[in-house]
Amino acid sequence: MRDLAPAHAAKSTKDWFTKKQLEVLAWPANSPDLNVIENLWAIVKRKIRDRKPTTLDQLKQNIATAWEAVSAETCDKLVKSMPRRLQAVIQAKGAATKY
Image (cartoon, rainbow, N blue to C red; front, side, top):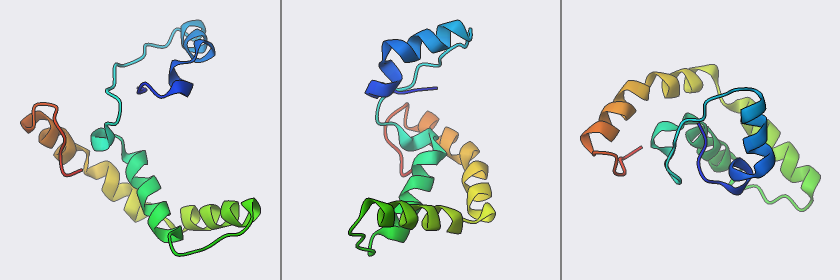
C-alpha cells in the first residue's frame, strides 16, 4: 500500500517492488482514513507541539521521547478501530470521514 508521495513513486522504489515480486495496492493520495500510522504521527506531534527545540538533536530527542510515550494500549485501540474506519469509508463511498 502506498500513495503518490514522491518517495513511493520513484523508479528505484518501483524497481524494488518488482524485484521482490510484491503487488502494490492502489491507494489514493491524502487518505489517512485507513492508515493508522497517520494517527500515531498526529499523537506524537501533539506531544511535542509545545516544546521548542533549538537544534536538530533536540528535535530528534523530543520525537523519540514522544514516540516512546505512545502506549501499547493506544496502538491497540487504533488497530481495533479499523472495522469502524472501513465501515465509515464504505458509507461515505470513499469520501472523507471523521477519521
